[in-house]
Image 1 (spheres, helix red, strand yellow):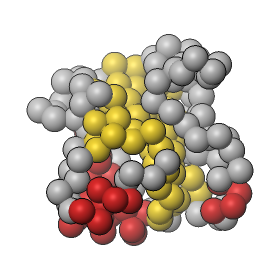
Image 2 (cartoon, helix red, strand yellow):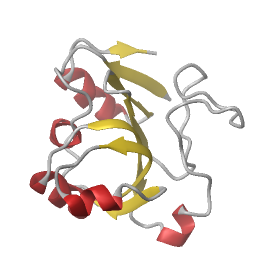
Image 3 (cartoon, rainbow, N blue to C red):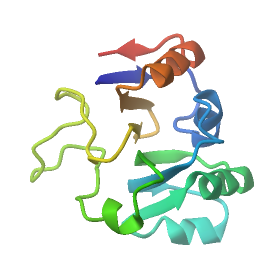
Image 4 (cartoon, rainbow, N blue to C red):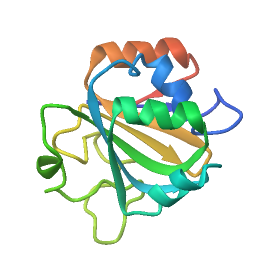
Amino acid sequence: MKRIYSKKHFKYYTMLKQILYDLELVDKNYWWLISDVEAYPQKEKYEDMLQEEYLLINTNELVEMLEEDDFQWVWAVFSVIPSNYTKEDILQFELPCVENLDDKKYNPHEDIPKMQHPYAELEIYAVDSSYMFMITDNEELICRFKKSYPLYIEE
């Protein structure tokens, strides 16, 4: 499992639409569990959606949202989960979070990289509008990330 950071590639972090295209995820069939969100979309319907504790949508719905309103994600965890799982399967676990909270045993920034959601193949973290990182063991995604963000930092 690897954690790879991008800190110097964008003027504003995190613009998820660009990342989806760079990592070639727009045509993949996944569930996107989006948790621990702070974001400011322009469209009221998306602002309302993101007020909830989490958002669980498929890739097509996510791309449609971002094509309509490509907003900045200040804080968020994007857990990318294979579509063969049901919503009920996915939601039986604790929601991933960006920061190590007092009652959490895992710090996604410092501890040995691992997925917070047990079904995730990839987790992307938006961190305080300052940088993003991803955790995965998918070598193809790691290569795409390195190609798209050559100033990456790998752990």
